[in-house]
Amino acid sequence: MNLSSLSASPASSHPLALYGWDEEWEAEFASYAEQGLLPGRVVRVDRGQCDVVTPVGIVRADTAFVTPHDPLRVVCTGDWVAVDPAGSPRYVRTCLPRRTAFVRSTSSKRSEGQILAANVDHAVVAVSLAVEPDLGRIERFLALAWESGAQPVVVLTKADLVPQAVTLSYLVQDVETSAPGVPVLPVSARLGEGLDVLAAVVCDGTSVLLGQSGAGKSTLANALLGEDVMAVQATRDMDGKGRHTTTTRNLLVLPGGGVVIDTPGLRGVGLWDAGDGVGQVFSEIEGLAAECRFHDCAHGTEPGCAVRAALDAGELPERRLESYRKLLRENQRIVAKTDARVRAELRREWKRKGAEGKAAMEAKRGRWH
Ligand code: GDP
Ligand code: ZN
Image 1 (cartoon, helix red, strand yellow):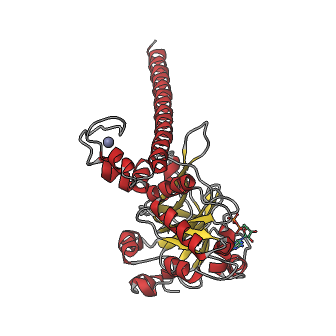
Image 2 (cartoon, rainbow, N blue to C red):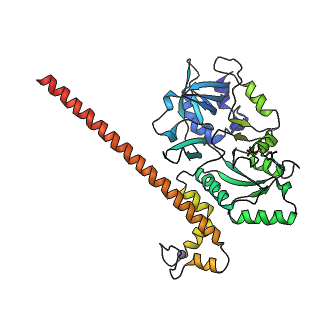
Image 3 (cartoon, helix red, strand yellow):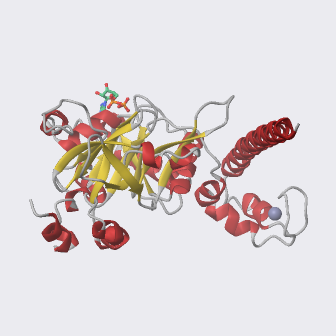
């Protein structure tokens, strides 16, 4: 296959167009194309290696050149990369700047960000209607989604379990109130209802499915992908030596267009420094707060408080304000912990440098004596 003719073709007819390659990526990649590097999208990562879909098929590449100390800059599923076509093993030479990124805290004790997925356009938050939706939990997922830079969408799954249409419309309204700027789609995979609307949302760009276990994510993924797509795409892959392999991919092409990323750990996520995301979930409260007389109003007993006025008028549910405060506090704790971690790392670094300096001095003195 002639690579130069590939890179000269318009982005829409590019072999990677199915994977989301567009003119912006093309422009971003131009200088690497001149160096003879292959563009590709990471469909899977595991310990120092990744599978990259390129114009010449799936290649396995080593990430040693692009593994920085910062865990947030490690290559992840969804990244666009430049791969050196020559050499065995092949190497990823660079990772193109991300448009969006999903990050989570790895554990509550050791607060450290972990990059889960890159270049995601739609964050689909699945919420089951088998029980009354937990609005606080939805807000938490939405904060994370907004923070990533992706556009959130709430899918209310198992709509067939809601006995009456009027109840369903109230539930949708409740969730909409908790999700300004977010489409809320009721769907029933069992009855096949609402799936066309969801398919239209995800047919363009890259999507991820988030939500609690049991929310119906796998069922949605299967409905969007068609039953055999996972198996077919897995067996079609080739490894670096041109053999067929059966490794699973975490990034799949949807038959109706678009791409879905499903990586372990991404589905049920914790907040990670999602300060801006929290602000977007509660945009109506932040809008009201801007109207408060005092810039640092705590919306308690201050005079001229627009938030309290909205509460008193019944325009803002008390629950929303409480949830907002809870998520802000939670986020502050995470940020504070991160700061402590960063400070501890710096101290270790200084100590190490100090010790190295001392050793160097002693070595010199040793030579002089
Ligand atoms: P996940 O853990 O989020 O991937 O959830 P699953 O997709 O495995 O679904 C959890 C359960 O909900 C399964 O027993 C599904 O059969 C069921 N389920 C999924 N979608 C629907 C639906 O539209 N209607 C009903 N009644 N049940 C559903
Ligand atoms: Zn106020």
